[in-house]
Length: 119
Image (cartoon, rainbow, N blue to C red; front, side, top):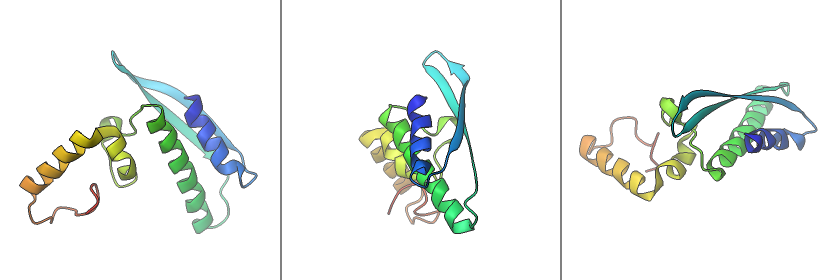
């Protein structure tokens, strides 16, 4: 959890900004727990600047999660925002399996192409 929090703090520190980060454990399982983290930070003042700040934090935090051996999907799966880290979670065999399923179930690539797996 500290790596996640530190990644968010460091991501905005370059702008001389601060972020309040708090984390709690949820969905406890024999294998571990889900880590839920909330980030509170000031808006930069423009949509583009706010989006850039969020992307820096999102990327830094996601990298910290996969570097620590965690998964960023939990029960929600991997969507467009998390797709860059899908291979870290699934591994080579898992990615091959997903590609195979897509080829069999959607041979023409019509069902939301390019969203989960890069073409």
